[in-house]
Image (cartoon, rainbow, N blue to C red; front, side, top):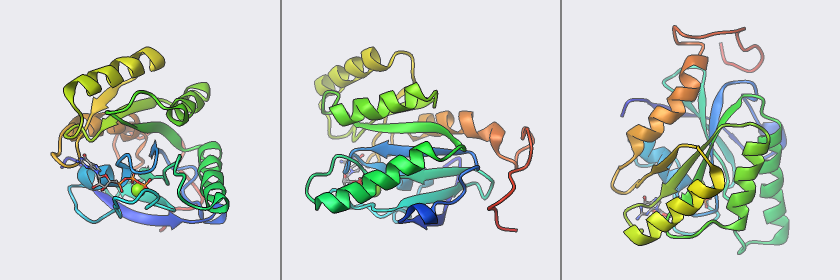
Length: 211
Ligand code: GTP
Ligand code: MG
């Protein structure tokens, strides 16, 4: 793998959110679409992020530090999961919304989409949210190994029509495909913002970094 990931912080509540000003890219998508599996695949590790066949596995916001530097890849709880209590659903949705609206360091939203399905309302809302706020969007069609080519092409076309010119990458965490392309997109945004890199620009990020 071209980059490493290390779990740095986990937030179950708004108060526990960290690194708000550090450059970061977040993985969003409906429950079970494969966010945590993709984190593992991107890191070339099996059990860095917890994965489950039961939707609603990730209940916290998890910050993974990239290349021991100053930028992060963030795994978010999924949305659209109906099989838990309304109260619990609202708690996650609240945390997710709080993260998305209160993280100045959020430099890209990686929106994971099921390549077997046509665009869903919740996914369109998430895409519109990012685009309305001017947050660069990277669309990822997941589980490429499971989707039939016809389904995949239909989904790709529908998303291209909806989103316009945003990068759209086909991945499989199972077969380890599309990972280099995705890293290229992520690092294309974050690389130059990493205070550890030669290309770092701007003021250092004061506040929440460990010494
Ligand atoms: P939440 O944390 O509930 O929001 O889910 P998530 O989006 O993090 O999904 P997760 O990575 O936990 O994966 C959900 C299920 O899909 C698991 O059973 C994974 O093994 C499976 N899965 C994830 N990616 C792939 C893939 O590329 N191919 C196949 N065949 N299965 C996958
Ligand atoms: Mg997860």
